[in-house]
Image (cartoon, rainbow, N blue to C red; front, side, top):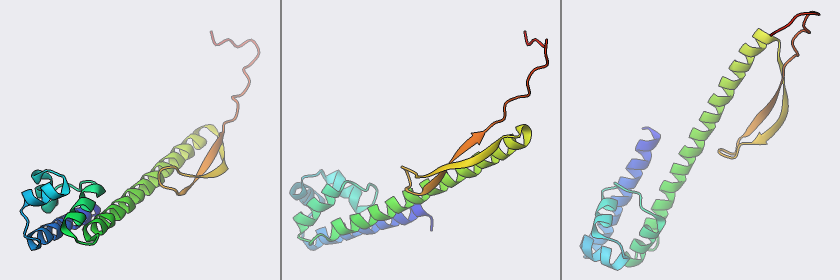
Length: 151
């Protein structure tokens, strides 16, 4: 199962849990919406897992249903999975950029005699992984012959 499919399934499961708790409390979607301070359509979309909504929505539903934070905890799990997926995608993108940059450098090095050195290792602000900062050293072109004019 792919990462987006996993979070979509988790969201549908949380929506089914919301619907079961609402029915168990003897409430309609309209009744829960009124108690939680959201619209009936917001409740309906949450119950079918169509929108993740904000943490505040799930907290309000927990309070209205007296579910002891179960819905908010479920939402927190979905957010943790989503964040882990985003970090993994950022790491993969960074690795792809590094591979591409090194391949381009190697090609340029072969063509021009340039060299490279690792200048520093820093933490990527997007994924938190260490990345090498490269310094490219390009040799000066050979001096022009006396009397040679580029103009």
